[in-house]
Image (cartoon, rainbow, N blue to C red; front, side, top):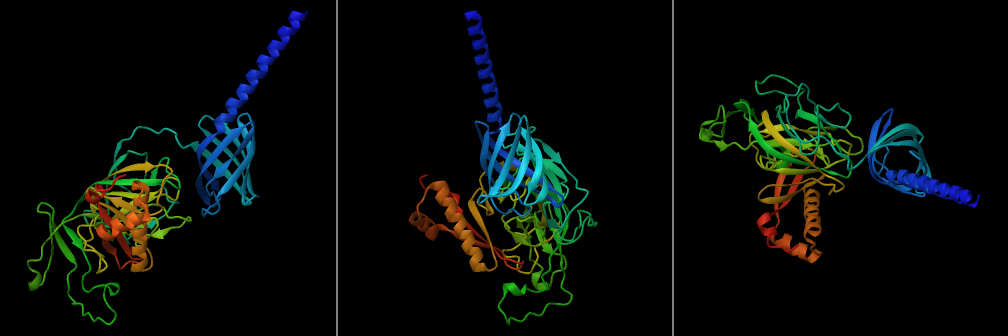
Length: 438
């Protein structure tokens, strides 16, 4: 009898341990970093949620999940096997509640957030994707807005390469046929799998080539933003806008030059004028404007071999590019470069969980930080601040060391002065950086 009792006790203990371990294993599956997509009638939003499951309790933090990206949230809830119920709190007030179900490396559910019915889908930040590949794409639609609510023309994973075309600023293709609305017509959006707010999208410009023998540039007079008030200009009534492009010779010249410009021939340097991602705060922004998302940056160093780092504001990034120029001087001071269509090849990469919340770039010679604001002064300050922060983070320099390096070695480019906001670039040579000890 005593043996039977001990045997029963042993069995119950083993069952208890097994159930406890199973519960612990299920709880631990909730712990980690999750990419969360929240859907509601008006659209969707996204944020990264970090969860910790301990003894049946589920706690953590979340990036903002509201439509316009307001308010980081705390998470507090409980787990029952593969199911969980959580409250989302803002400064202790319950902003929403969700009922969730876990399945492998994802969870889903529904509930309310800020009084609005929502559905939730989350995947682990480390979720694997297919192997990178090369895409050849001839778009069948274009846009003139940077936005996060357009249907993607192609879904990409980090490491993918795309070979495609862009239209000119009027929406014309390589045959001068209309294919899209005028206004710095964009190719895109491209949806990048795994891209989340707080990440950085990396664009490697592999190839940029003209694909026709003509371009247009308004040059009857300089834009008023580029000259002093009171400076009088008298544009020639018959002044030509068309330029001839010779791809074989790599040369551009006015098609109908005046006698004094008959020998005016310049080397072609194809560049991307408008490049960026969906803007913050759920905005749609005209392709001729620029800001934190990128946009009409018109920086004539965005050529073959450049790498551009764009802060991500929306799940999927929603990447666009267009407004090709065969050539452009600093500042785009007549209001246009040599506007033309292009053949483009680029590669996408993703830096998870890191962002300067500012556009920066590099090529074989320079590290470059973009400043975009409402005046040249403030744009320069933004560019300088970004480069200073980069030096502190990447080289561990103190403020005096940063001041010494930049005061002696910084260079500035005025990328754009005639668009809604000026764009100034602060840059430093990589040869200078080699002198610094990390």
